[in-house]
Each structure stands twice: as structure tokens, then as C-alpha cells.
Amino acid sequence: EWIATVLQKRGKYLLRGLQAMLDGTDDAGATRFWTAVRAERGLTKNALRVLDGTRPSAADGTPFARLLRHPLIAAQAQRRAGGSVTRPPSYLAASTVAAAVLDEFVGDDPRAMLEGRVAANALPEPLSTTLTALARQADGSITAFATAVEGWYDAQMARVSGYYKRWIKRWIIVVAAALVLVMHVDALSMAGTLWRDPEVRQAVVALASPTSCEAQKNDQQAYLACLNTEAAALRSAGLSVGPPAGCALTDLGACLLPRRDAPYTAPDVVAVIAGLLLS
Image (cartoon, rainbow, N blue to C red; front, side):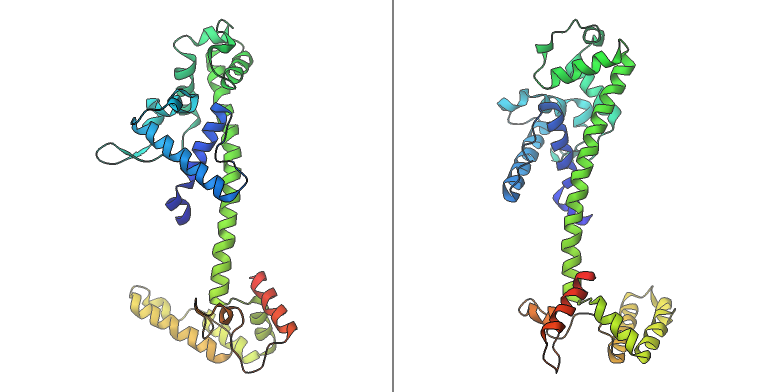
């Protein structure tokens, strides 16, 4: 969540979804990582410029830019006290988008489109074909037309949510891998130690039960000292807890294979890697 907030990923994915919906393009959808990052950055920068109303360009005439400038949409952006835009909207309600679409692209007389009196080429493609199809589906009802536009937006946002979830999963793997490596959370090694050594098992059970540390939660320094004491007790009992000795950025090998008296054999290395991957 913190990474997503810093990188403004919700707002960026929302912009990508709107652009794909209105213009039929997704400039940030490149397959190569750095190409996609640059395209997404360019899309966001352009959207902020449109929302800010500064430095107009030829792209301002696109349906995507026109919708962003609509007061219902522009009001959702995050702004400084002076009024300049700092972040694009990270969420837009379907009813808000539908109202803005109808106002910006259909105009004051939605029945003209509903009754087929608006030429198909009055709007750029693919927006023209899409709205015409939705108008035909509404069968003369303005309320049904607005509902259809909401459904169109919701369907697009469902796709965007899928992209966002896949992005989140990749970052979860990255964060988990870093924590497991630095803290050396070897599930197989820990399970084996607990299975073979009853004294270690009893020590872990004793420390897992409510202890005096709970009473010190209000004092951060005392609470941390108490937890460190418990961790030291687990280590002295024989359970690996926390970063191994020598683990540092200058010696990542010590994080993967903690130092020990006996040399590592090939099966030992495989077991350690399997335990880390399982964690």
C-alpha cells in the first residue's frame, strides 16, 4: 500500500483505463518494462497538465482530455492550496463518469442520440460507435442510457482492477523475498529444529504464550528491549531468529547461507533454498 501510494499507481491505472475507454488506446500498455514506465509517466504528466489547465497542446481535443477537463472529473484531483494539481484522481464513481460523459459528448439533447438523429461521425472513433450502441441499447430511455454508460465504465474499471492486482502481487513477492532473505526465515530449518529438539520446542511454546512484554507496549523502548530479550532466548535455545551473523549488503551470501562450523554440502544448499522459497 505504501509503495502504491508513493508511485500513485491507483491514479495512473485509472487514467490508463479512461484513455483506453475513450480513445481506444493505452499508451502505457507496452510489453517492455521501461517502455511501459516511460509511457505511463508521460500519460500522467499530460493528464496533470490537462487537469491544471496549463500549456495547452494538440492532444487537448481528444475525448480523454475533454473528459478530464470536465468540472465533475477535474474536481476529484488532488490540489495544492494555490490550486495547482499534484495528483490525478485515484477513484471516480460510475455515476460521476456517466454524468460527465453525457454532458461532454452527448450534449443538452440526449434524445437526439437516442433517436438516431446524431450522425455517427459527430464524435471520434471508437467513442462514436460505443455511445451509439449504448444509445440503441437504451431504447429511447435517458435513464437507461446513463445506466448503460455506467456499466461501460464499470466493465473497464474491472479490467483495470485486474491489472492493479497483478502489479500488487509482483510487489508482494519482491517485499516478501527481501524480508525472507534478510531475516533468513527458513521454514524447513525451523520446522526441523522444532521437530528434533524438544527443549527448543518447549522454549518456543513458552515464549509464544502471553508474557511480561505485553504489559510494556506503551513504552516503546522497554517493549523493544523485552522483544530483543525474547529473540535472544530463542537463539540461545537453538532456533534461528533474525538476520544471520554477518548478513549485510556487502555480504549477501551470509544472508542466504548463514555461517557455521560444518561446511555446506549440495543437499544442504538445496534444503536452505527450498526453505526460503517455501517461506
